[in-house]
Amino acid sequence: MSDRIIQEIRRAQPSRDGDGVAIQRIAGMQHAAMDPILMLDELRAERREDLGGGFPSHPHRGMQTLTYMKHGGIIHEDSRGNRGEIRGGGVQWMSAGRGIIHSEMPTQDTEGLHGFQLWVNLPAAEKMAEPRYRDIPASELTVLDGTGFRAVAIAGEWQFGASTVVGPLHELAPRAGVLDLHLQAGAEVTLQLPATESVLAYIYEGVLELAHKSLGARHLLVTSRGERWTMQAGAAGASLLLLRGEPLREPVAQYGPFVMNTEAEIEQAISDYQRGLFG
Image 1: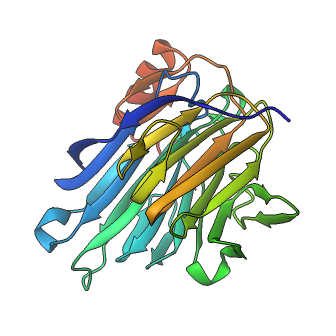
Image 2: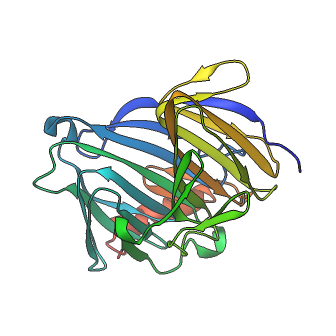
């Protein structure tokens, strides 16, 4: 089996989005080694004021969003009539398809918030499909406890030696997989992976030991192709969000919340939204 190596390390950049929500962002719209992952935001607010006004109503077309809340609560509402509320450990997934307008607002009792929002690309053949939505409470996620680690599977199939864990979000699985991995102090784990897929790891707590240095939180590791990846935690352990998916290898045109294949399609998306054709 061929081993994956880390070919790039990207640091999250502090920013604000929505109505002033503090985030740490890693963008990968044109990044071939991240395809089909478009963007990863870590939402981490210790104080209510860092939540700003949440994420009021805004449009999307041509991509999927996945919101995973570690702490705090978020309410989703959209122009298709969907409404869902998730709290610590829950997941919200939405495929924008041909167009949808939605909001994501902190619950009234949320003082602090910690979670992630992932943008995943849709292939050209599905960008104008009907929008879809699903939420999954933490109790329905799949957990694997192994030697020195705990893996919480959100989407996709993940293999640790003879043990496999599969996430319940099957709608995302053909495009991408998402796993929340917790390593105990000094623990080492090896993942078996499809050789052709993009595989990324975002460190959000603790330290991961690399060949020549230690790497802490708010870093994304981009790997080479390969069938196996071994990771080792530092003395304080490590928590990582693992992302993977089969590359689409299609052109990406992006303007704000719209992700299409050509500039002409972006212009059409803007026009359709302005004419009230979303949702």
